[in-house]
Amino acid sequence: GEVVGVDIAEPRLAACRTMLNKYSVTNARLSLGDGTTWDPQAATWFDLEPPPRGRGQRARKRKRDVAVAAAAAVAAESGEGAEVVEEEAERFRTFDRVLVDAECTHDASLRHIEKFGSQWGWETLGGRVPWVRQEEKLYELQVALLRNGFRVLKDGGSLIYSTCSLCRSQNEDIIAKFLKSEPRASLEALPLPLRRQLAGEQQHADAVVAGAAESSVSPARPGLLEVDRPLGVGGRYCMARFDPRVSGTSGLFIARLRRDAPTSTEPGDFAAGSGDGT
Image 1 (spheres, rainbow, N blue to C red):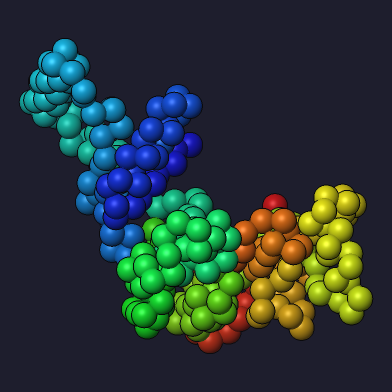
Image 2: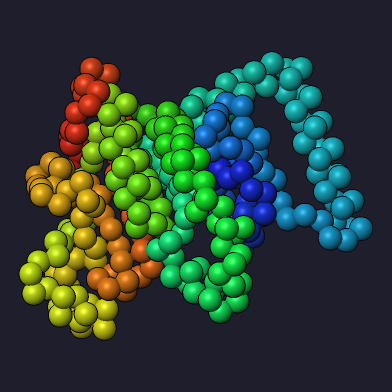
C-alpha cells in the first residue's frame, strides 16, 4: 500500500519529508495543494529528496534530473509513457482510507494554549489563530475539507474526521451537516469501546489520569450525537471525545464515516454503516 499526504503549507510538508527520510519510509508521497479542491489526477507532488546544501549535492541532483528526463523521453517515444500515466491515474483515483485532520481553533490542545500564557502572550491569539474571529469561514473550510476527502474515498472505504477542538460547532455539527447533505455517507463504528459519564464516576476518572485505571476502562467518551445511544452497528459508537481528565491527553474529537454504494442511504438520515469497525 501507499500513503499520500496533502497540505497547503510547504513548511509542514518539508517537516513531513524530514520524518519520512529519517525513518526510511518508502511507501509515502506528499502533495502540495489545497485540501478542499485537491485532485489526485492533477496533483503537484512534493520532492522527497532533501534540498541540496552544497555545490557537490546540487551537481548530483542536476545529474539525477537529467537522467529522469532522458528516461521519460525514451518511454514517450516507445509508447510506454501513456501506460505509466494511466496506471498512476488509476492508482490515485480513489483511496481505501482517508484521514481529514481538519483546521480548527486548537482550543483543546493544552500545550498550544499554555504557550499563550508563557511565551506568546494572549494579545497574539487573534493573529496566531485567526479562526477565533472568523468562525463562519472556519466552518465552511471544515465542511469543504470533509467533502473533498469523501470525494476521493472509494465505495466501502472509511474516513476519519478529526480536530484538536472540543467545540461542538467544529465537530458534531460538521458531521451532522455533512450527513444530511451526502446520501452516500453513513456513520461507521469505531474499533474501541467508549464510556459514558455516569453519576459518581468522576472519582474513577481521576484515577484514570493518575494511571490507576484497569485495562477495561475506555480512553474516551462518545460524541454529543451519541449521548442517548450509540449509532453504530451492534451498539457501538462512531464518534469519540478524548479529554485530559479521562484520556490523559489533550482534547481530541474523531468521527468515522463510511462511503456506501449508491442507493443505500437517503439524504437526511443518520444511518450506521454496515461495517463492524474492525
